[in-house]
Length: 99
Image 1 (cartoon, rainbow, N blue to C red):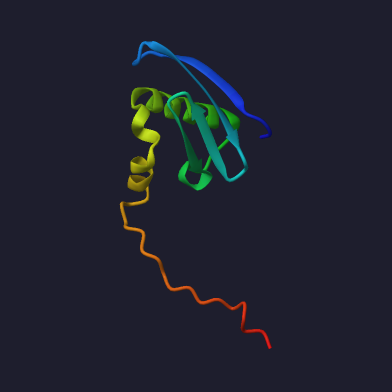
Image 2 (cartoon, rainbow, N blue to C red; image 1 turned 180 degrees about the vertical axis):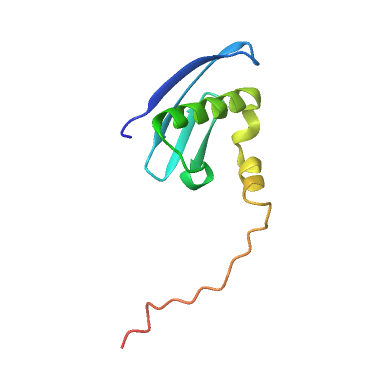
């Protein structure tokens, strides 16, 4: 998908119009709204990712962002990753080992 797709709909549970847009790079769906942004890898979304499934998924994400604007911040991302502390691993470079 080249370019952003605009989405606008009325969310019955929020009793208001919700707007945003999304793009897809073939690996992930990137959702943007006035309340924040989120990205989701396709492998997290299930087997069927046609255009209609993308739009339906994006509407759910936009409703969630409108309901809880702080949900797109780092704390949420950290929660999605399992709250594991970031511990640097040893790095062994092969750059200097050519003979």
